[in-house]
Image: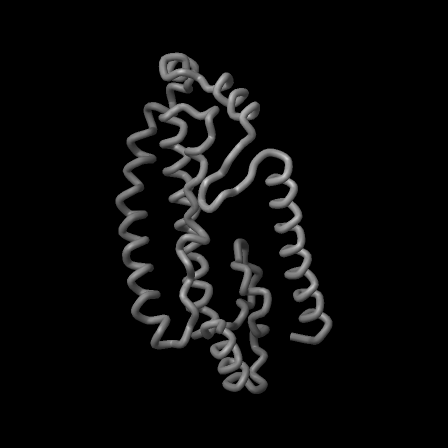
Length: 195
């Protein structure tokens, strides 16, 4: 990878981080405060949220029937997701220390805070909890797999690939064999625990 591309990637990473911070500050200052793990709204906003909440019976009547019909199929996915979570967590817990790779913090990816929203009824909160687990789990697994790929094979594919992880852009170009072993070792050292 040439210096210009590396410089652009560094700038993109810095801008993405700045954007994430700015968006979070905007959201927090406008609507809520985070106190530990608790999200707190102003009293007037909480009251407005409660008035917007649909009661259970109104929600059932207004709900799309196809969503109720497919619910058992959607929620049956909890079994493979839980098994995936268990196996991937076990993998990183046992193998990452051996490789010298920093562990992925599960709590950074699987976040349950939507149940604190007063405008959601208990069924909507349940749906949100399920979705937060599913999408957070996939992001958690993606980061573990990305670190594994970076450790063993940080080489881009020859063909364009959709949905690459954030680490992929810095991988070695396909077919660029110069100093491969030394560069592979540099990737591995970069994956170590940050002190």
